[in-house]
Structures are given as C-alpha cells and as structure tokens.
Length: 250
Ligand code: OAD
Image 1 (cartoon, rainbow, N blue to C red):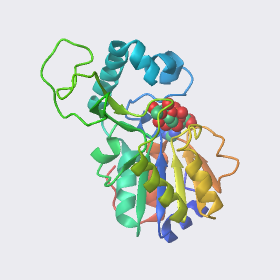
Image 2: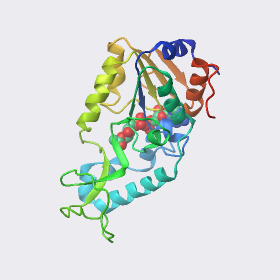
Image 3: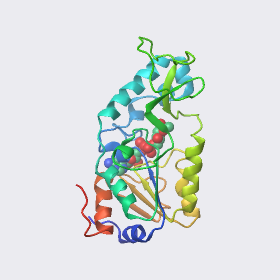
C-alpha cells in the first residue's frame, strides 16, 4: 500500500519535520507498549505500584527489579525498519527534530542524532535524592544499590507519573512543535500529556499533522492525515514513495 499522496508531498516539501514517537515504534522490536490490550505493560502491571514516586518510596526493590527487567529487555532488542527509516529521513530533509516518549534508546542505536527524550532513558541511573546521573556503583547485594556519593537509593532516570518532564527537553520539543511545518505522530496513543499536546501546538501553527499508528487515537479526528498500520512497514514505504530511486536498507 502506497503512502497517502498528501503525506508524500508534505515530506518532500517540508522545511522542518518534527517527529514524535511513542512505544508503538518499538513494538516491532519486541519492546512492549503500555496501553495495547493484552500485550501492553499497563494491562499486566499497575503503574501506581511501579511507576510513581510513591511506589518507589513504598517498595523500592520491587520498582528497581521491574525496571531492571525492562532494561534487560531493551538491551536485547534491536532497532527495527521504522527506527532506521526515521534516521534515513533526517538525512534527506532540510531539518528534522526527533522527539520521543520512549526510554529505550533504539532511535539512537538506529543512527538518529540529537534525539529529544521527553521521558528519560531506562539505561541511565540517577540518585533518588539529588537526581545526579550515576555511571557506575560498587557491587552490592542491596536493591536498589545506594548512591556512591550520598547513600540514597539509586533509581532509573525515567519520568514517573506525577513527575515533571525534564525542562530542557520539554522546552526544545515545544519550540520545535511551534516551528515545524510537518508534524508526524508515530506509534503513540496520544493520551499522555504534555507530550500529546505538542501535536495540537503544531495544528494551531497550521503545520500539516500526520498520524502514523496502528490504531486510531484521539488525534485521528483532528489530524490532517491519518495512516494506520505498523510503523516498521509504513515508514520505509513513506521513504520509498517520497524519494523514489534512492536505495534504502531493508
Ligand atoms: P501506548 O502504549 O499508550 O500507545 C502505543 C500506541 O502504539 C497505540 O496507539 C498502538 O495502537 C500503537 N502501536 C502498537 N504497535 C504499533 C506498531 N507496530 N506500529 C505503529 N503503532 C503501533 O504508548 P505511548 O503513547 O508511548 O510514560 O505511551 C505514552 C507514555 O505512557 C509512555 O511514554 C509511558 C506511558 O506511561 C512514561 O513512562 C512516563
């Protein structure tokens, strides 16, 4: 199935493409999404027990172990054709800003540069007391391990429910959403704010907003273009249609 012609045209003529990705782009890499029925993490686990500051205070070892399991899963995953297509796209357009809600680092591993991570990165660890990033810590049986500087428990450098997003990342993302002329919302349920509000900022600024997602979302009805399917198939197709004659790695 070819990409919608309006989208192909928008990609060819855009001066600044802003891309917002969510868990759906990593689904084909075997990283579970959050809200898909049956397979989504929040269908199996209670975010209140695992992904809030209160959960960490109540049961730090449970939270640490759950994130260690996810970190392991992410470390074993490989970027898929959707991630690679976005890295290829950046090389072919005047300007592209890639914003992600994902914490898996797969965009960077696919070659995307300067990725704006709105929700942190699961591969990084920080001190729960002062937020400083900790590269390594002495071997210990404690779970979570203590901060080598102050002894406070270490935690993953991800944003939990009820926490603020990293200010620099959010500011950069908001500015891009205001400036871009094409906004692509890819593999996200478009439910979690403030990330989800950036598409509306782009709409207000009269950018073309295109949704590329498996299922319809609240954004579908207002988006300029909605194209439903798997990101790992649709994004390489979009590149082939927008840049015919170029060779793309499969
Ligand atoms: P969700 O799990 O809410 O949504 C994933 C979306 O991806 C759904 O709309 C699916 O239809 C779609 N999808 C699934 N497989 C796909 C595929 N192969 N190709 C394209 N689309 C596919 O994930 P997010 O929107 O990323 O926050 O969730 C937002 C935030 O909620 C996450 O960053 C996380 C979570 O709580 C934090 O951890 C702070």
